[in-house]
Length: 404
Image 1 (cartoon, rainbow, N blue to C red):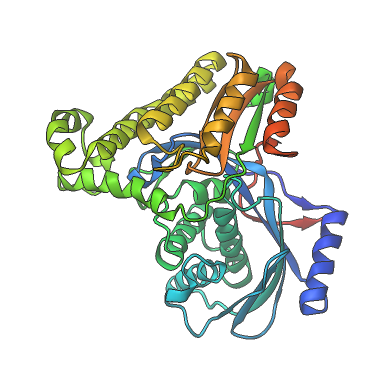
Image 2 (tube, rainbow, N blue to C red):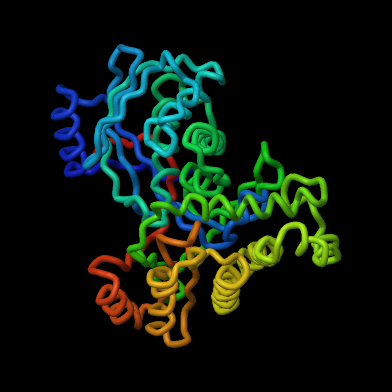
């Protein structure tokens, strides 16, 4: 599916060029962009090789880039220290875990494994995908680096879905986070898509042609203002507990276990894996089945049914997946407060749900246009100015940008 060219505006180019000149001297040669993503259906289903409904959004990470003729990659992101990676060493580095250089090194390593002659380059990046925004700044960054390497040194041989898998590899192996593939895939491919990850090597990607605005609703992301710091164990426990359930069946992921077989074994699973693991598996089965129903509702133009399914998904995430409040937290329950505010200002209309990984970060809401101003004002009054972001879906995934 072809998409429109993504153009770099004169103002954007001026900002990137100035930052590049200050950091490296001279001018960049080329410009690249990768979008953030929003997860619309399938909460924590991707790492079980399940189904998702996701979209690239109109917030992105842009880079001005120039080859530097060395074996060193240097990337300066606005507001952050310079990341420097020597290409002479492309194996995981213990002290780089959870750092940006780990992502760069991991993406470069995978390209080299694929036969790409990766060389050094300089890049200056500006991002509107804020870290912790729930729009997956890390996936956008991984896809950006993969897109740069693909175009600079590999003649664009690697497909966008493959770039997504390279980003996941970097995050899993070098960065140390056991993430699924949804974030990278949505960022790399672009548009509104449903993805079935059952075949690990060849996920099925299907575009979904739908305009939320045509149904009188805005797609909003609400930043709970909570920090992801110290929550790595909470995130890792979700796939970890699902994996423990799978081990009782001798399987790798829940998609390999028939739902009836799972339910028949619940008494034993409660003893061997614990109740939270059982509940999280129940969520997976329910939310994985919801995704094709959501897609069908959109294709049929049944937006009320779609909203009903979004509300059901949020209910399941809160009750069964339990990724709204970190274990033991009492004084700080930021995502729960954000959900409560959304429900209050929606007054029974639209829909809202925890978004993405959960625990911190964001809530997603579909807000009727006639409520949008009051909704945004009420949310921002509690969570801070700009906490409510109104998004649009971006047709392009990771791309080289044309200059206007």
